[in-house]
Image 1 (cartoon, rainbow, N blue to C red):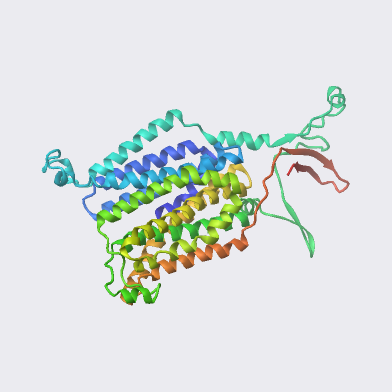
Image 2: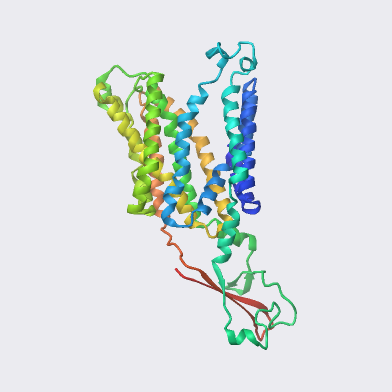
Length: 459
C-alpha cells in the first residue's frame, strides 16, 4: 500500500532530476528497510521496515522507464522488456533459499553461536544478505549505469527539425526571420504557449495549461492500459496467493463428490511442504524458459498487439483449470498440475511485458514516461495489496460451504473483466520519422501578437 501511494511521485521526480538518482535512492531505501526488518524485535518494527521499503522504493517504474528509453528499435523491445520478469523469476527461486537461512543459530548451531547476534535477531542473516546484494548493486549502478533521461530528452529534441532557410534568403536577408521580435514592436516569449478554444455562446476562452498537460499525459489509451495492468496484477497475485494453499489443503475422501461438480470441490490436493516447494521451483524454471525463448519468438512472429489480444482473452481459462485437478487420479495428478502451471505461466509471462510496451507506445512524449510508469506501478501495487485478503476470504468461504474452487473461479471472473475491457483499448499506430516544426510570427489587423506553430509529422 505504501508503494502504491508514492509510485507517481517517484516517477514524476525521475522526469525532473533523472532516472539514476531516483533508482539509487530507491535501492538505498530498500537496503535500509531490510536492515530494519533484520533487527526487528516485534511485529510493529517489522511492519515499519516494510512501510519504509514501500515509501522510498519506486524502482519498478524507474527500471521500466529506463528500459523503454534505452531501446530505440521496436523489434528489440520484446527481448528488452522480458529482462525484468526474467530476473524476477530468478528472484522467486533464490528468495526462498535465502529465506531458509532465518534463525541460523537454531538451524546451524555448529556455525552460529546460540548466544550471539544471530540468535538475538533470528531474521537478520537473510535480510543482511539481501542488504549486501543491494549495496553491491548500488555501487555498480553508480559507476556504470548510464542516465537515460538525457538520451530521452535528446531524442525528443531531435524529433523536431526546424525549417531550414534557403541560401539566398539567409546570406543577405533584409530582415531576420528568426528574430524573437520579428513582426512585433516588443519582444515576445516564443517559448510560451497558450491554448484557446472557441465558445458557442461567445468569444474564445483560454484553457488551463496544467489541465491541458494532464489530459495529454494521461490520455484515454494510457488510462485503459493502466487499468488492464491493474486487473492483471490483481488476478495474478490472487493466483500466487491461492496456489500453495490449494496444493497443501487436505484432500477430500469422497471421490464421488469430486466428480459431481467442478466448482463444488471440497479441499485441495493434500501435498506436503516439500512437494509444493519442488512444484514451485519447476514452475520458476518453466517461467524462465518462456521469458527467455518463447516470448521473443512469438513477438517476432505475431507482433505485440496480437499477443496482447490473445493472452488477455484466454487468460481466464488458466484459473478455471485449477479446481478440476482434485478429480484427477494419482497417476495423472502431476501431469495435470504442470500443464495448468505451464498455461498460466505462458499467459502471465507474455501479458506483463506486452502491456509495458503498449504503455510506452501510448506515451505522448518521452519526458512524461516516468510519470506514466509511476502511475502503472502504483495501480499495480494497490491491486497486489487487495488481492491476497480478498482471495483468502473467498477461499475460506468456499471451504466452509464445500466450494474451495470458488476462489479460483472468482479470480477467473476478474480476468474475464480484463478481456471485456479490451473493447475500450485501441491499437495506436506508431509514428515514424521526424517532425517538421515551422514557427512564424504573425501581425494581424486586430493587433494580436502571437506565433503560429505548425508541426508536420511523418506517420
